[in-house]
Structures are given as structure tokens and as C-alpha cells.
Image 1 (cartoon, one colour):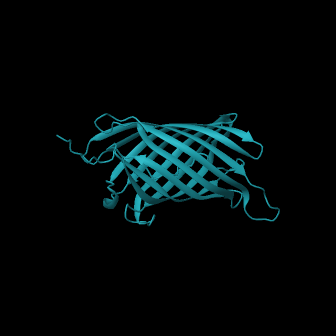
Image 2 (image 1 turned 45 degrees about the vertical axis):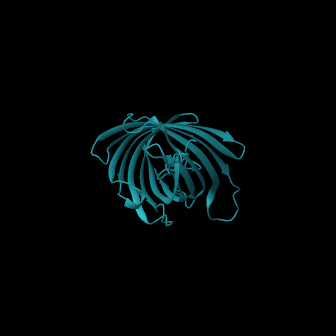
Image 3 (image 1 turned 120 degrees about the vertical axis):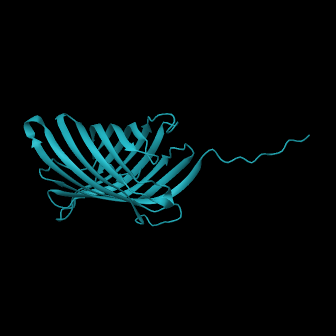
Length: 251
């Protein structure tokens, strides 16, 4: 007897969601002889949905993120931070409302290039939140980023200074309990952006992000893409600003 063909669903599904990231950072000195400084970031992420192409349609999350920064070693910078992520419900995208808190440790190693720089960055963070079922979750996550900054030629006339074209690629792995999510892969993110100094103390960034994230069901990949902008105020400028630590994403 001939066997019957059985229709099977594909192992992975793909959804596309436009998004945007807006961020304001304020950096300030703390104890200069100990090479310590501080920074506070505020971030708003907006998004559309699978059937809504407007990246500003919904507020996805609002983030408050203070940092303690140590730069006492040559070419190396270390960060300790805390992040409060208020994530909002978006029914059209299947996003529940969640208050998430993170503890973060991060290190960056930078190397000079003839007309630019490159850097490697490792970040370990632990996420604390109650999921949509009210179950408390503690999820460690490991992130690794590689980036390159190209220093653009400065025109003699006054205006923007310290022009850069930068890009990075970042991969993230999560380590939850097996009953919450079986897969370790979390996010693959890329960004390309232009940055420059508006004044001696104020710098700007404008670019695009694209990232692919695996949902906790292990079958749905969401691809976020869209514009990203940032402003950073340095009370005491420390040279060329390239935004190596920018946390521009829509996870």
C-alpha cells in the first residue's frame, strides 16, 4: 500500500518587525586619580508589528541604565551597570508587559588603526523578571561584539568634528532553565552608524540596526530593523567619541 504524504510545518518561522532606538547618554567624572567616571543612559525603543510597517507605532520599552566606568588600563575599559527595562504590552506582536532588571559587567579592548580603530567587547548580564505567567525568572546572558570605526577626514571649515563611520556585529547567548527555553542562541545584531561632535561636549549618532532574535518557543525568529539615533553629553570630553558601548537593540 502506498504511503501517504504528511504535510509538515517548517522547523522555524520568520517574522519582520520595523523598530527604532532613541538614546540619550550623560557621562561625567567621578574620581579622576582612580580613573573612575560615571554614565547614565535613557533609552526609548519603538516598533511596529508583523503587519504594521511603522517603526514608531508602539512604545516597546523604556530603559534607565547607570554605569560605573573604569579606564585605568591602556586600551581597556571596564563597566559595571544596572538597567531597568520597562517593557510594554504589544498585542499585535505578542509582547507581554514586563518589568525587567539587569546587572551588567562589561569589558572593551580597543586597538588603533592607521585611520580608525577596532574593538572587541564582552558583556555578561543577568536578567531578573516575572514572565507573563507570574513566574520569577533569572536568566544569565553572554554577549560578544566586534566593531570597527573609520575616522573620516575633517574639513577645515567649522561645523561637525570627529566624524566617524562605524559598524559592529554582536551575538548573544542566553542560559535559562530548560522549561523556559531550550535553545541557548538569543540574538544576532548588526549596526552601521555615523557619529560626530556637535559641540565640544555633545556628540551625536545616526544609523540603522538589524537583528534576528529567537523567541522562547524555539521556533520563531523575529527580525527587527530600522533607524537608531543617540546623543551623548560629556561633562569632561576624553577625545574622539565612537559610541563603542552603545546598547542599540530591540530585544
